[in-house]
Amino acid sequence: MNELNVGDGLSLVCAALFGLHVVLVSALARDLSPIQLNAAQMAVAALLATPTALLHEGMPLPSPAVWAVAIFLGIVATALAFALQFAVQRHTTPTRTALILGLDPVVAVVFAAVCFGEAVSVQRMLGGGLMLLGVVVRCFPAHHTPSHPAA
Image (cartoon, rainbow, N blue to C red; front, side, top):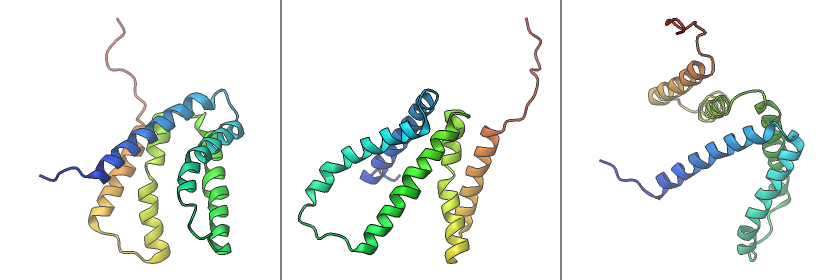
């Protein structure tokens, strides 16, 4: 039997925090605009990242190319992506949101295979297929009427 290591523990904590984030956004998205919610989240992330940045004070500054990539990712892949999530998440449940966002590894494997020619193993295909099936089954359940009469 394999033992849990630090990475497994961190993955578990990350998954729990991810779930908490989805639930909190669902609750707050009804009362706040996506821009307000996104600004608050980006401010909290910046505040939490500041101590780490200060620990690396002696490191050389990144090159202009690295700054350009960081700015692009900060705006497009973070701020814009979260703003879109917040705008849309108010129209669905936290469960659906988490399941759809849980497809990230599946999309990453497909992207890597299509764009970079990475090999896709049977194990990855089965895992991705199960994740996709779980999303479809949970997000789009068959509509049926109860088989038992109301008492």
